[in-house]
Image (tube, rainbow, N blue to C red; front, side, top):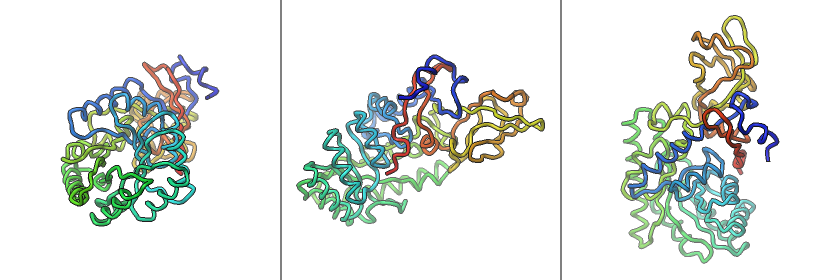
Length: 370
């Protein structure tokens, strides 16, 4: 699939063409196992968000460790997962338009996967129903509830119940549950304040769940959560699924507030120019490293500060004696600033153990934002 795969297997990571995303395979498996172990004794299960890794190989490891399936942000990601054999997929987003809903129906028909999009308005339900009729399939769906983020979601328990009834009364759709996202809580860097926001958000979510149940309708899935909130959301009474995703890789943003999951993903970059005044230039730029949350952090060697990132280059200030010994051609490792958006800039992972490439995994969900 990749021309360089055979050429890199068994080689050291310092022989990889850069910039490149490298996975510490041992750490990846440890992070997956640690989160699976956390949820094993809890009433809530784990349905990790695949928007982080966009890779069926990683999803398969998560499912093998006990995950129910995966969550996706977009239909394109769900297509990548379902065609690779992932059987249960939640799309935590709304699908709009006949072309998109036809893609969903076709995917369900030809893969047999359970792919559950979210709805938050009557028009979305009607579009799904028309697609199900055209493709002669039954489509499962969930209702999204807005609990404070003010993005997608029904804005009241009554509005949510109306959508639930529409799904439940359809001959071509099935109501699978309610979902929500307390993403606004992540704005709170203080963990106590964050927990308070999460708790208030879950209370609001449970009001909608209770409202639907009191109307005599069972709510099988009650889903929310993220890596930054899983310790609160995962333990909240009534939650059945948590959608944490970034824990598999971790990044510089989450490392400031989430403990127990060391980085399993690094960006490898090469020194391309050295200036005598203690400034280095590498081939890591904005086309390979996102800075939407925080910049990457150079960790090997230590004592380097990123002064500036342009499209194709980074300018680095050397502060430690070890860093000052770097020369053109040397390789550096960085923790990515935001794993989800950085991954979307790359085509593949170089999977490594003890500094040696053991596999190359395609990022098949990369760019699948439609």
